[in-house]
Image (cartoon, rainbow, N blue to C red; front, side, top):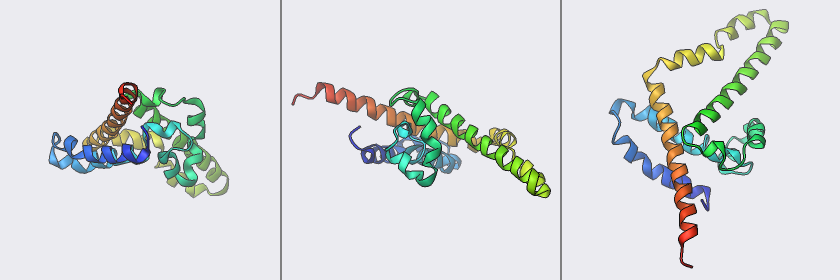
Length: 164
């Protein structure tokens, strides 16, 4: 697509269409997932200078390995698989940071290790997996990705057939 702004605008305009088909009590988690997927976890995170990459500010450095291993419109643009790849990547980063903090605290602050052990990423993911709102937030992430990929496909098709 020509500009990231176009993606974001069309994604936001499509959100009410998705909400129409959802139970009202899950509008918020779906919308949060959808907006996060549009602005922060976009398939365009595979590009170093994309708007979603820049939005991570100082934390964009965390996405450099992902960008090095991903080519644009590669795995990140495969529906559903792209979303799960980005979520797995974030989970691995969080888990690595957790263990670094845990081992650092075990040397310098024993009480801190007891407190941080309650925040183990696997335990948190397991707890989230049993929440119904988690499903709708994940659905929002996937819907934003599908909208993004559909726009990319339509844009590529239009560029091929335009008469001028």
